[in-house]
Length: 69
Image 1 (spheres, rainbow, N blue to C red):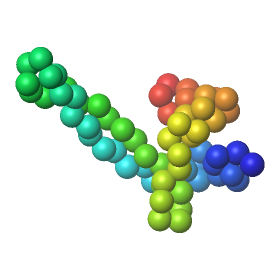
Image 2 (image 1 turned 180 degrees about the vertical axis):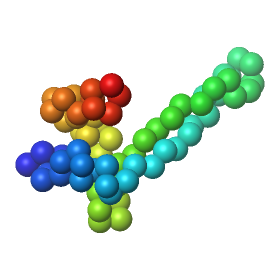
Image 3 (image 1 turned 90 degrees about the vertical axis):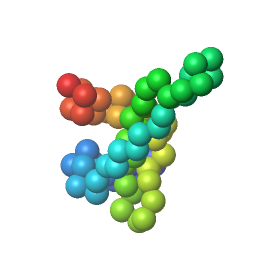
Image 4 (image 1 turned 135 degrees about the vertical axis):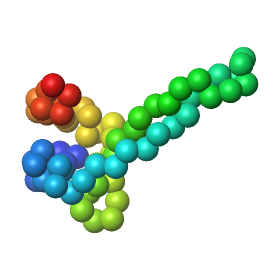
């Protein structure tokens, strides 16, 4: 079974994605110098799909162009 199971891109989109912003801290300058955006896809059961596996599967299934195109 794939990480997304029987999910289609439409299923994942309808379950929702959440954005989190993580600061990038420069230890030499002792300050935040940027932000990294992290997106998490909900699994419909109160949790999130595994990001690494989801990205790998998205690339293999051609979803990356749909979401980033």
